[in-house]
Amino acid sequence: MATVALKDVSKVFPNGTLAVDNVSLDVNDGEFMVLLGPSGCGKSTVLRMVAGLEDPTSGAVMIDGEYANDLTPRDRGVAMVFQDFALYPHMTVEDNIAFPLKLTGMELTPREERVASVASALGIGDVLGRRPSQLSGGQRQRVAMGRAIVRRPRLFLMDEPLSNLDSGLRAELRAEISGLTRELGVTTIYVTHDQAEALTMADRVAIMRRGVLQDVGTPTQVYGR
Ligand code: ADP
Ligand code: ADP
Image (tube, rainbow, N blue to C red):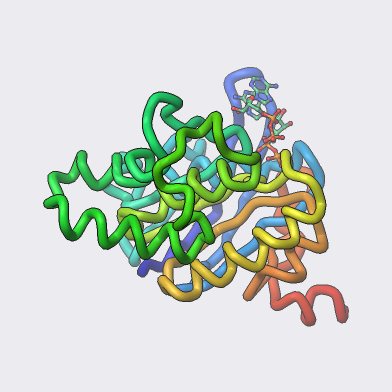
């Protein structure tokens, strides 16, 4: 559980591109915030600054009220899922999901229990023994999500995780992702250019255009205006 606050955050890349222009945004504890806007408007850059993968040129990122600028991604307690997820091809589904827990030194029994509960929430409990090559695209994305969430991060960051999937699967996974994050109570920031995704998943939507934050509110608020 965590809060995130962006305070007057800007990002200018070395080539002079102003990708993010003075954005301030508060994300509440346990909230599902969707960052919505067309390609190139700065969504990924915002997410990468929250994750600690990119430094703001000016302004500050705060996590739980503390300045995060000097914290590594690991210290921030973030887990991230991208559209181009990479699973370990030689490992089973179970081992893929368990891998981050092994790194923390968790014992076998609690590890197996944790993996089983995440896998069952994501509907992949029956394919734990398979390897990634033996899964559908949707199943692979579920494994990637399971691997990200299994450590119970403070913050869950997703960048267009469904954009490579067909529309039926997208709809199914939307519901699963919102269900899972709410069940875990994990604060989530979800980047998409898909308005339907924003409307169905978000507690609140933050709409970006050309690096600027244009509007923030519940789906009803921002589309009722
Ligand atoms: P979105 O996620 O909304 O598609 P991005 O945050 O990826 O947008 O990009 C915002 C703008 O910043 C775009 O104009 C993009 O080309 C530019 N940009 C992103 N990353 C870099 C980079 N590493 N160097 C220079 N420009 C970048
Ligand atoms: P998306 O729109 O899905 O965020 P992009 O194609 O904009 O993806 O960016 C993919 C990667 O390329 C990102 O890591 C981004 O930082 C980088 N990138 C984007 N635009 C530029 C650019 N103009 N110069 C250098 N790197 C860039």
